[in-house]
Amino acid sequence: MEYSMNNASLIDLKNLTLEELTEFLAGMGKERFRARQIMRWMYGRLAQDFEAMSDLSKELRSQLSQRARISHLVPETVEESQDGTRKYLFRLEDGETVETVRIPMEDHRCTLCISTQVGCAMGCVFCHTGSFGLVRHLAPAEIVNQVCAAMAEAPVNNIVLMGMGEPLHNLDNVVKALQILYTPEGFDFSPRKVTLSTAGLVPEMLELGRRIRVNLAVSLNATTDEVRNRLMPINRRYPLAELMKACREYPLQPRQRITFEYILIRDTNDSEQDARRLVKLLHGIKAKVNLIPYNEHPASPFKAPAEESVSRFQGYLLDRGMVAVRRASKGQDIAAACGQLKGKLTAAQSR
Ligand code: SF4
Image (cartoon, rainbow, N blue to C red):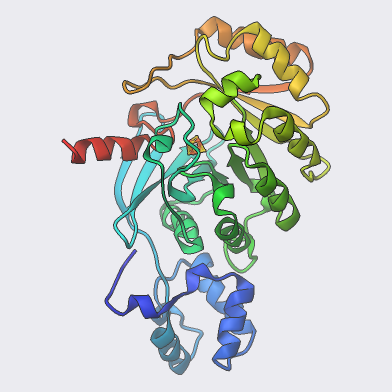
């Protein structure tokens, strides 16, 4: 984001929902429709300053620039993998960094994977971000600006909140960012195109369902508390039975399903008994299972599953009428799994 000495006293309009922006402008004695106009400029046309807003009077633009600003992000580095996955590293105003990944889909559409925190407090043992701990939450502006920066390059069709951080640990800012993404005068994303992935913060999951519509993905990765406690420490606070109960209570639209992400790790969670237990756990839930073979990397003790155990696992689920999709790990050559770019940079800096 661009930063100047007096930035701190200015309100960043990218932090405001339409309602809050309307209120802010009302405080300046301005009409309600101005908020929609400004939203259209900031998100529809990706304007980065008030000068560009040619349908606002000169006087209003000058009043706005005395009280407010429009932050934006510029990628510090962009890496592109052979499969077309692009990974952006953004430096924030306080010097911290986050990453965002653009994933091309088969039909020429693309999904953007965005971050919601710097680091993460959840400590999942298979995840590089988890090993940094939580540094801080991202502000709504820092979340939506990842989308603005990617959109400036090319259109984005779907958004997944699956980058660095546990979105539900930063619930208020994430809900605001979703409201901004959904604003018709802004990006006008349909909630059907946005998916939030959680490690399983149960009370916040239910709170999310009460506050806003979004597709839910649960990072499951185990079928017993013993294994899940080991892989994902959050399971000690909210064990599988509680998590599954919350999934059963999550409000779904008629054709909506909860996605369960299951990273298959060799000799840890990839057996036929696991497949059997998974079917039982998801019984009665409108579910879709994403099977993701573990992406091995040098610093990790875990191994990728054997090809045949992946097929056997998937076959077992399909035979029992479940929706089970095998997901290729995209961008393997640029370490696009969550947090790995930051890991590489930190390693390089500490050398
Ligand atoms: Fe956090 Fe997600 Fe990594 Fe778990 S997998 S530590 S929730 S970023």
